[in-house]
Amino acid sequence: MLVSPGPGTEPDVATTPLAASIAVSLDQFLAGIGTRAFRFAEAGLRSRDDALDAVQDAMMKMLGYRERPAVEWTPLFWSILRRKIVDVQRRQHFRLRWLRPEAEGEAEASLDWADAAQPGPSQSHEQREAYARLVQALRGLPARQREAFTLRVLEELDVADTARAMGCSEGSVKTHLSRAREALQKQLEEYR
Image (cartoon, rainbow, N blue to C red):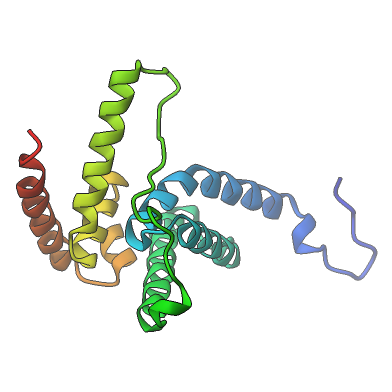
C-alpha cells in the first residue's frame, strides 16, 4: 500500500511504484543468477562455505546498484563476484595452514546437480562424473582463463560484458578463452 505524502513533503523513494518494480526486478535477477554464481564461486574457491559467502556478499553489494539500468546488472554482478572471489583467495593464501585445516575430502565434495527429469542411476552417475571432470579441469586452469571460459561459455555473456566483468580488454578475453578451450580440450580428451 502506497502512502501519499503530506503537503510540502516529497514522496519516500522506497514507496514509489518505480522503486518497488526495480526492487522486484533486482530480486528476480538475483534469484535467477544464484545457482550459476554459486557454481562459479565454488570452482574458484574450492569450498562450499566460502562460495556461499562470496555469492551472498556479491548479492548484498548489488543492492547498492539497484538504480542502475537492468542491462548493466549482469556484467556488474559478475565483476563484483569475481572481486569477492579474488579477495577470499588472497586471504586464504596469507593464512597459515594450521589455522584453517581442511577437513578430509572437503575439496573433493561435489554437489548433485541432478535435473528434475530424474535420470536413471547409471545416467545420474555418469553426469556426476562428467561434471566432476569438468570442475577438476576448470580448477586446473589459470584463474583468468577459468573466468573467461565460465563467463563466455557457461554464462553466455558476450565479449564486451565479459571484458567489463573481468576488468580487461576484449582482446584479452578472446586470448584467455582460446587458451582455456585448448587446455580443456587436451585435459578432457583423456576421458573419451
